[in-house]
Length: 341
Image (cartoon, rainbow, N blue to C red):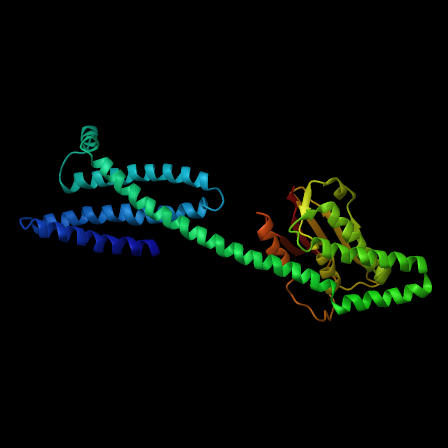
């Protein structure tokens, strides 16, 4: 409907203006000649102007400049040539109807040789260049805005991860556990301190990095899981697939796995009678999967609500694959794209 209204307006206004100007230059033209010329000029304007506008919009949807500019350029040239030829044939056919001449191969050959087709081609190329150039500039502007937006989201996500580590509740809970261990098991308390130091060292070392090797992220997760297992005991069960160690050429955003485990612990019950199971594995589609049983807490407590949103925002910046979440069959699943080295 949008394009239909535009076509009608272009046909009436632009076609009428050109025909009116033609009538002013030639006072001897009859009213029928004026309307006949209006039909030709209006149709030509719709085909050349509005048609190219629609073609540019359609190509921008299916072949955006930002993904593969060379491919888009080739498709644009081919589509413009094909469109021009079809549009020219329509105009030639309309001319034969309005001016009562027989349309055949000789007539088409005559129109091509007398320059009609090449004039139409030149007009189409100029209009098309304007439309596609406009589309390129708009896409470029949108890309810059989106890149800036994703950059802010990326920084916000890293800040959120760092903030979670210096969260007073996180420190308070771990110090309480440590205080208990010091009196019960000095060796375990020493291991606890080392793993807590490893968690914070990783946070500091990775705070400026956009991607880290999966192997490095898994080691950090093991340190964090050690802390959580001391705190929750058998109430928390985490299974990490052994084959993850073979994915040495894959990368992830730092602290992604820890944030997802934290998210599962924050929103789900973990008790001896109802232990929380969290699985970490890779699927055949190139995703790292974090999956946990759904056993929602009655009272979640304070939550920022931006954890998953920030992770999704970071991966928009890092990968052409999106973060996927699903909730079915009693499980909550998050799939993170694995980024090749």
